Image 1: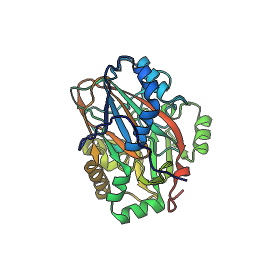
Image 2: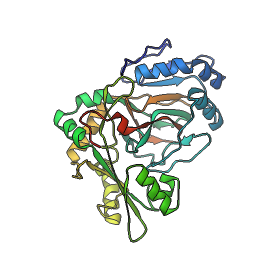
Image 3: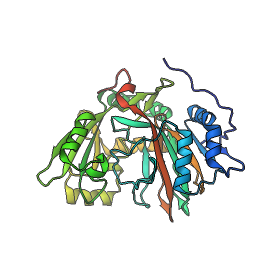
Length: 333
């Protein structure tokens, strides 16, 4: 049974084009504030989909881990199946993905290609860049409504495929992605998580996983566009980078690529349309050092702008969900 999102008593500010924001006065004791306002903040996330908290003055990974622990007493999830490396800190707190600063990370739902994914994302900014680098959010319900019906229908009936090639040169190695180095353990993980795998003669691992593209929110029951079809597709990669990768690894050896659920390629026009719709629904505001942001990973997609200067944003993932528990009536397994 589903229900509408509850309304919070916190004074969350709404401005056009910007994510909902809560300003904290005298936020010197961030962990204490998080503990006292945990329930209300979580209600605000349920109501708005994402909330940026400004004024806590977060300073270091230990403080961030303490705040995350107060907000999510059930604990944080380990990082699994990431497509790029993360630096681990402590208590399930990680760096943001290793990704070139001059290349944006397009809208996506965190590890939406995994069998088990986080229902909640936590971000903490310890150093804001000098320019750019905002973490944008977009309402997956609105994105779904704005997409052409024929595209939605195909993805909803077929699902989508993620094809990955793991190597030592680019992206995460399979040891980093699966958290194990032994081949037998990798195969066991793949079988347990509905991932097809194939070892190449040179030792490279290639995998394929088919996932639903539209899910129902576990609380509200609303249909959400939920995937990484656009972000991990070859046409979203910068043209010069894509040409280099294809030249070196071949068209089937790209570190990641997405397809329709039946295995057919997704056209450049469709990927461009998806990214255009995301952009039309993106809310963003520049990070300030010390900020905290909570994002409902099902209701809201998120992105990262290109940036200049040092940027340090720490990530936590919580509230694991099985993607096939949320499949819509027409969704494909």
